[in-house]
Length: 387
Image (cartoon, rainbow, N blue to C red):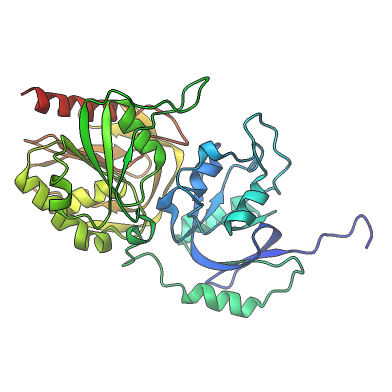
């Protein structure tokens, strides 16, 4: 083969409509099917791949420099990557960062996740925006042998995320305590040694940085599985209840989460704070409905307006479903709204310290404009404890 001959594709991405994108495979070999989304963040590919909210999805990164800082154990948001695979424009280069412990390709291969580089991600992103999040099959074969008809058929056979309860697949197996706080120079993650408030965090797919943020505002955090009952929550005598992020269709997870939330709120006046899927769970518990979005919100640059203060926050987001603000019942106030498409991004009860937001105030990756929400949660618990 001459030096100018094109490289043989070693990976391909087949969409359910029959469109096929070819590229260079890296990470694990094999085949997977999922929903395809795109993420516009310029940093944090490792955190994104290990965010449990991406279960059942393959992530297209719109930023081309993916893999340039390698990976390291400190930046995992959960024990293993949860996203099914990744699509990037340029093949990852050797990492150049003092924190790098291994290459992205090696990390993905060791963790069993498939990736494809050399794809026209701009064209792919436009297709997702125009047609909605497609069902796809991603394959990596070093010999470049692909059964395209079978891949397209596999993509068409993917059931989709509507009706899927994925929280049960990513939640913790048993309860545990958490006392690690947010990363700080130069020692990394300090330990919370003087907590003021007892918090139960229900894990629908919780990111570690959320738990760190809770610990950083003085919380002694006990994490419970998604299937926890109201009795399980109340047995810990918490000062507050936190509802975490997570994947899948909120209506499906709500079949067991909503009764728990309602019972806790009936039996206790403790503050309740939810984010992402937790926001949707709270909205469902209060009587609202959720809807599937065309392509969702995935990125670290989403402007959200606080309707009560007029302040605009730049936020991190990762969700494919949204709360239908038109279905909010009396006594539940819409507090935040996306400036991209006007979708709901926050609610609160008018007469109780119960609220939630659709976005990720813990960032990781992304801006930290919204960390004040954790401080608000702590203040609400402080008021209750001091009463």
